[in-house]
Length: 146
Image (cartoon, rainbow, N blue to C red):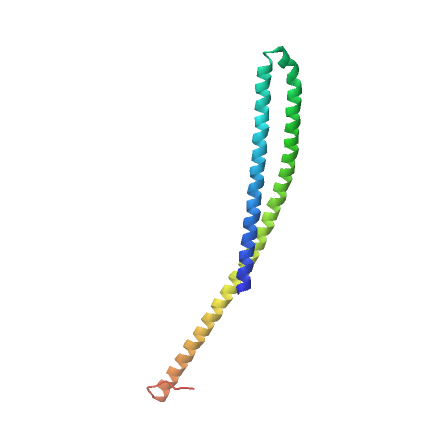
């Protein structure tokens, strides 16, 4: 019985751990999205600023290219994160399935133990009823001891 409970607890821990990793990966993805949006905002702001000066007009394409390179690197990283998220979701499904299997085994074992306890209790009550019936049949006021 203890080993089944341990397996259930262990698998619950595993599900929680995989769920935490998934949340962390999704936070990383959101961070990359935000950083990409920040880069777009920086490019737009720099374009607005550079249009007012002759030097800025010539410098802006280099700035924009470097920002786009950074954004491309972010997108590559985000694609890697997306792959990890998908793999972690699959792992989470497997962990849930495994946990459910152990929970079902635990529930069945508990039901069997309860049924056995009820069977033993019923057998004791049946024995008491038989003794009472025998004592009434023989006319004694005390139940017969075997």
